[in-house]
Amino acid sequence: MNMKIACSYHAGFMDNRTIRVPDVSLMEVGLAAYKHVFSEAKHLDIEYRGDISLHVARSPITEAAVFQNAFIQEKLAGIGKDARVVSIGFHLCGDRRDNIGAYGFSSHYRCSAGAENRATAFIARVTAATGKPVWIENANFYSASPAEIVANWKSIVRIAEHSGASLIIDLSHLIIDCLNNGVSPDICLGMIPWDSVAELHLSGIVEGRDGALHDGHGSPVDHRVWAMLDTLMRYGLVGGDIYLNIEHSDSAWLADPVAYRADFARLASRLAAPSRTNGGKNALGYARAYLKTLLKNAIVNFDEVVELSGISERELLDGWLSHVDATKKRLALSTEEMDSLIRRESIVFTDTFIDYIESRFNENRD
Image (cartoon, rainbow, N blue to C red; front, side):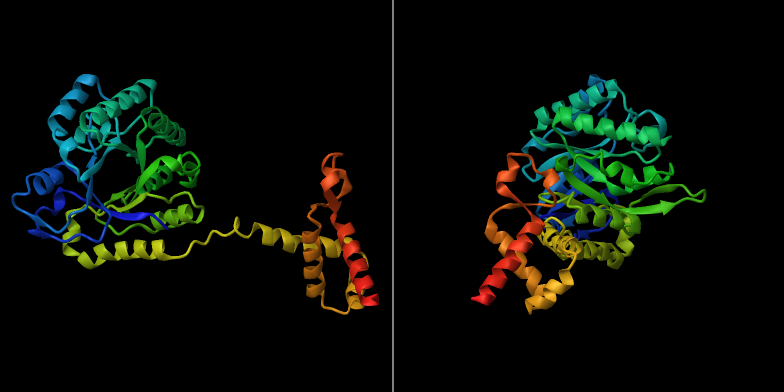
């Protein structure tokens, strides 16, 4: 398993003099943390010297060019010269002044041709200005309907395709958005181009008094997030160079380091476990076993043949399959499936059994 563990480090941790982070391959940091810890680094000692991914929750990604240019010039200046920064991630959000954006959060994204064009242009501007790869994250968790969820996922995919950006899939956001609308989160899994995914975010989920679900960066990774990760790993949808980010960026974790590290241990144990997907590897074995069953049903006096053979049923069937392999011909389960061309290199499977029994009879007679 080549997947790598990452963690998030945000400004909430900056009241601690010495920062000890887990053994990770990548640290994701917000603008404030990057400035005060990794750029200026005037008042903190952090025990981390690895790769960094700059992560920006609120940006003008879908706003007009004038706002995009100002943000890039003022906030991303100098990033291109920092070799530690391997990528810049952005929430795919709407205008910073709209809906919950007006209260300081990542504004809710609503797809449109204009929003997609502006996002694609922003990604191109950031890449040109910094020389860094751009990753975009699904940031919505308060969609108004199942139809909106599906439309926005299709929009995210189009933006990634047109811009060349990689994807950050926040499993908590995905689950929250779907369950708040009474939709199974699995509906989204088939819409995601997994070959374009650079990172998965794993975090907590909290439930409000009215039953609505919300993001929980100060809570342990939710059991539904672990279950979805297990599903993705079991199906082989994630792998390669993907980062798995335990997104525990709330300052509350400073008071509970044991629980903080427990989630990293859970993730490490999952990555160390052997893959449970073996259907493809065992396909021939399954086919051979099923072929034995078909043969036993097709030969009306099969039990009598076994008794007369003088060997066990298993030995007889294994010997027959070895005989089949030696014929170097393709088996057909019936004559109806064979056209004139394929018939030249095919043989009906029951005929091979008759040939095998006759060969055994001749050997024994000799």
